Length: 241
Image 1 (tube, rainbow, N blue to C red):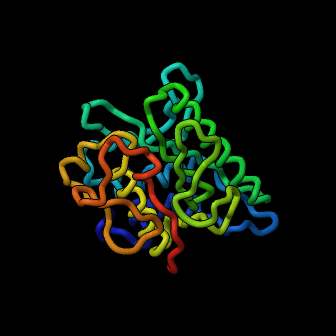
Image 2: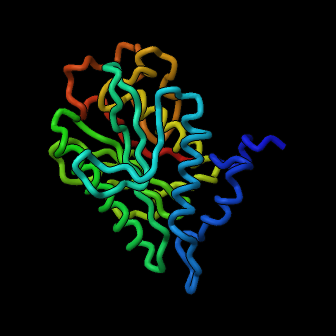
């Protein structure tokens, strides 16, 4: 058995014991004993480091990172990358929450926390046009974007509303995992500031179907830097899984 091989979805044999600990019915049945929140965070951190970004030399995933230098708060996970300027930039903040008996409470709570951290970052750096966000409930993930000057999360897939349980995707599901992985790769291709990886065409956006659609790097539909961030962000459409 190869410990780094995937057993299902984005879960490798090495990460499966943690995944099994963190995995919960969704939504929760009555009287369910919840796993610790830290276990789910570890599962996703392992997925990002060992699966999603394992071949990306200049993408980094770290835990307990302040949203900006002057903050005493800590984001559960931060994905950063090296931009063309050779500076480290924030790509995405991810907040996690263990599920509660009231599932809508878990999603609304974690979504508000993620939004608060993203807004704190953007307020501290007005030159950054947007930042991506992730919200994790148990082993279910949803991805978003927050634009400079806007007051809410904009989803990369599914319903336009927050607190929508059915729009969370399971890290261990084959179809959901494929969409999650494509979304993260495309986020690097359309980062707040151009990434070295995308500039060198070492990493290209996934082609074909997917939950989100981004311009292809190096193709005529890729907009020049002068265009607004909204023009280069994903358009949302539904796709049957």
